[in-house]
Image (cartoon, rainbow, N blue to C red):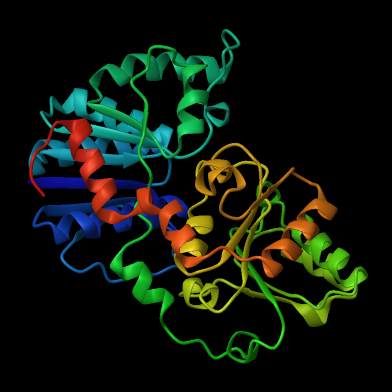
Length: 365
């Protein structure tokens, strides 16, 4: 089959990385795959994606992606299109209708619906919801990356077709990346317990809570280190907080790195402190790498990933002492490899592809 996988932007973030994994998994099964990127951050290089035809349009803004999508659908004539993020899903569905494409369309939602829609009449979010209600009639499948998100979507689209399909996270490439060596002494010497976290340094990720937790652990006399991977506008604020708490010697903010999973594999705990997620890929990546997960019970995803606290530890958002307690418990009683593998089984490549094809009514590998 000819399959198109679309992402609105290329960046070091959950959606484009997950879409690239999907493209690679489809190529491995013998399909012809185009990977369309609406816009690429000029500071970033798209990594080699063997066997995949990468098409980067450098079109900024969802409404501007519709004309090239129409042209692509008319000329390339894919059998299936996988898109991700609500605004892009809507654009793909509109483009498919205008192009009179016969492709099966599967759109995946990656963030809570309140970020895009509203039930308050005549607001911008409400108008967007009405548009999507019309466009979704063209969809062959609409998926969400967690069961909790499906429930949330029901409050905006009670009769919507949304079902849960996890991202591909556990595959041979991910495991190989986790096995790569690192040279930072914290990760090679392992002389102190080590917590890792990763994500864009924004308010939504709430890394100020994690820094405060490190201060609390120091106050308790616990020698624990933190490596926080990622970049963003909150870096100066976090660096100032680290200095104020006098924990510069136990916090490392390396910015973006090519392969954070290799570092995760040498750490004890993967911490997630977000206020909101769609489904936190980084939490699953940490579990693939062998970290015990400790996460805030934010909407949506963490509770589902770690089985309600059955594998790892859940705490309330913004509860610094509770997060410090959970990290101490995780260090004392880490999750077993068997428990981690059980919890992430639905993120395995073969499981996710089979689920997508079953929903679309497609047979074959």
